[in-house]
Length: 305
Image (cartoon, rainbow, N blue to C red; front, side, top):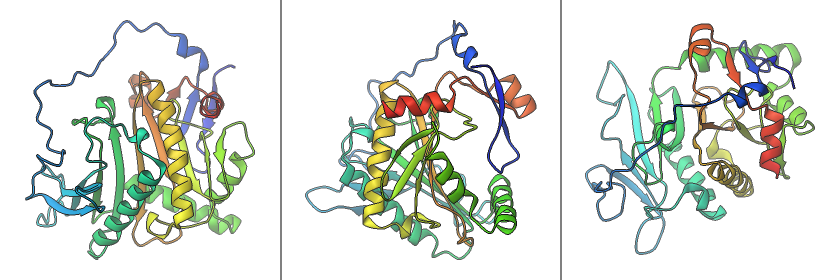
């Protein structure tokens, strides 16, 4: 397969898919090293009770805990950078990977994220909420114990605003949601990863990251809090499968979910972006063109295997 330019659906962004570059030699390798005497602040016995917002789950200990971020970039008492930041401890177990959690546990994780979203958006100043997970140092994680984060702010980031405007333009021109159309088309393409009655997953046509994957509910809805129990279970099973395959490659990853509070027309989905040697360098930073040496068709085949 030769290199080719690919445009990101209805967005004004381009990627160059370059399968041949995957064979480039790599002399410099970076490895993460854990600190042996590190005292984990996310384990049940050492958690900072002053930062604790709420615990979830019945039994002797909690299943998931929500904490105030000790080192927030935004805060509700900061007029110059207003917002909310929380840390979600995904599991009380220190050495378990997120992909090793059961499907019911991951579905319960979505329940917690829905609850936190409802609570945070009670603040009428909040315009935008990002719920995300960093797994591995290359993805930005600084603590190994599995955890996620929530970032909410009173401003709408320009990239998100631009995407919403382009989506709205598409709706006006075609009288349809662009993401509903993308999902329907991709589930018939070689980029399809999996689907069932409730959800569909695929490797996007112009993937910016190696093995990038998107997971959509088939029903058009705008945020995680309106998912049904069946939809959450399907999302959980699909996410678990994708993350397990990424773990098998030994890669770090990010996954995230957006919510623009005052836009009920957006289509909720989960983006999964693995992080490996595909580091954005001179071409990406200088030109804005992203180079990806793993074709999404190949990525989807890997996930299906």
